[in-house]
Length: 328
Ligand SMILES: N[C@@H](CCC[C@H](N)C(=O)O)C(=O)O
Image (cartoon, rainbow, N blue to C red; front, side):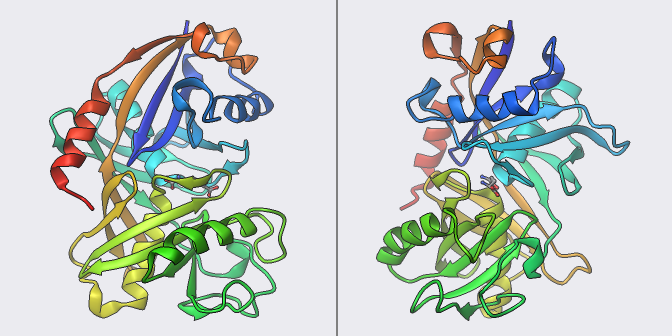
């Protein structure tokens, strides 16, 4: 029997697949097909935003490798909420609490944190490298090489935008009303993740409300997914944009509290370091263990009636924790 784990960071839901525990690793095409199938909302346990593939790393400094397959089968260079979950998985298996994980662009430092509440496990992960030039996204036809708190009339008639790649691409805007946070975000997110001339590879679109000093609410329309409960790299990139665009509102020596539709994370931005980076701290919750025949993974035929699901009980603890925070 093989195993999948259903996990989340701020309710950004994933399946973890450990390739090292299989008799035969899934091929790239099989991974694409598996993600497209099991991430559907009508699929197992309500689907997910992506599959996190764990494998061995041949980098001396790293304890393991993470590959991110979005729900539509596309690949992402990074996933912040996912990295917290993968870090916990590797930590639980290796007995180590501080190490590096290989991702496509960098080996990133991760650290176990004290539990946020009883049975609510947490990790801090490094988000880097940070890039601003248009080639990193890529974007085109916007009339500039980088975008820092500027109007983009081609995209919208009243908002200002910032583009930051960490290194997956993010378009960020600070908004002050719910219409923009919901409708404008949905329309723009959809437009920029269909074939379009501005972001030919698509882009994660994050709209944020400033709630106070070092406090944000962030909502994300994710590339390869659509609306998500939370996007870790999106909240990290938006925190950096907050510090750069509203320096009076951010004390960079203190964590920024970032609430999202699925919960809350903390970020610590390092805009003044030679290589800018962000620390992302939040839950790494394992909600279900799923026993599945390995052949069904290869064939992407993982259905509710062909697997055995064990509820870990962690979701009830997470929900109690979120309720205790009394978020709006
Ligand atoms: N949810 C993620 C980001 C996942 C990748 C994204 N969809 C992309 O294609 O860049 C996160 O927590 O960072």
